Length: 94
Image 1 (cartoon, one colour):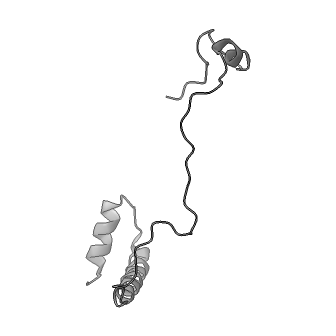
Image 2 (image 1 turned 90 degrees about the horizontal axis):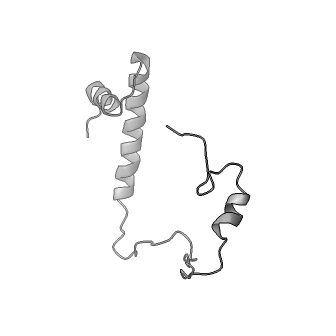
Image 3 (image 1 turned 45 degrees about the vertical axis):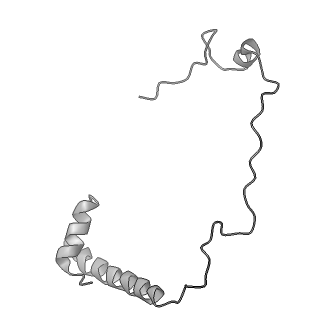
C-alpha cells in the first residue's frame, strides 16, 4: 500500500484531527512502519493454530441470577444523602 501525504491527510480528516504540516511526514513514516509489521505478521503460517477465546486458561464463571434478600425501599432511602421519599435524588447530569 502506498502511504503518501494525501492518504495521511485523508485519514486525519476522517479522524477529525487537526494535523500540523510538520507532523505529516512523521505520521506517514509511522504508518509505513505499522503496515510493514502487519505484512510481517501475514507471513506467519497459522493453519494449525486454533483461535483464542481467552488470553488465559481461566474462563469467566458467572453466578446464577436468583432472587434473594434485598433492602426494602425505606431502608435503602434512609441511607441516601437525599431522596424524595420514593426515589434517590442525584445531581442533574445534563
